[in-house]
Image 1: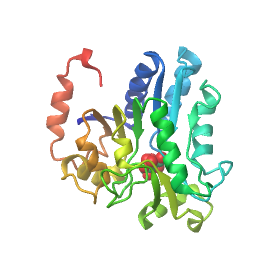
Image 2: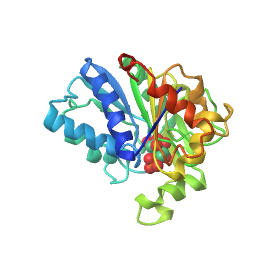
Image 3: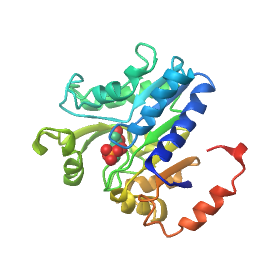
Image 4: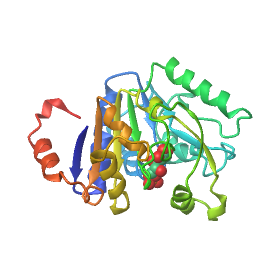
Length: 259
Ligand code: F6R
């Protein structure tokens, strides 16, 4: 795991966009996209680079991490709609290149299994963008999710439903259930980019990065992955015990190594 502490959320967004741009410019690739507030600055950066810097996503495919169960894809808060409105409709992904889970599937388990097959059929995810929940979830793998879990239905914790209530008219409108890629699925992506900004994420980041690998903090499973870049702003890094070490080693890293 490489922990990179950056001064501001804008620096996190730019650094994440740099890594994604490098991946996309290398040729056909598969991106894993997260929703929520965290990656919005990164998506804005990428849209800007598409508009002014010729960055094209025409050869890329994208897979969403998760989806609310019970929201039709046209619902403004379905992750299908959110990712289209916040990112993919503003760049040049090909028709049918952006894949998501169907939250209205009659058989959620069959939908989950088909999604796994679609990811595998695309050759797996090259670069996965991740946010983190205040309870340590990644995707919607809530505490006690199996570290080897695959895509499946999960029940959201009260805390996550409260955290996400800001996107809905009423807290009661936040669905109880989601379909999410599992921790085992996420860990198969070749490079993971975990982003976190703000004090509210500091505890979860400290547990994920410096705590034991334990199902109670699902993001700690990322410690088992061979290539994870954790991009955090000062506030999200504020509870890390080894901040000086991370900053010192990143500062002396050879530039050619990239992320
Ligand atoms: C969203 C997702 C979630 C969010 C997490 C943080 O696709 O997978 O894990 O990344 O809930 O949400 P925000 O970024 O809104 O704080």
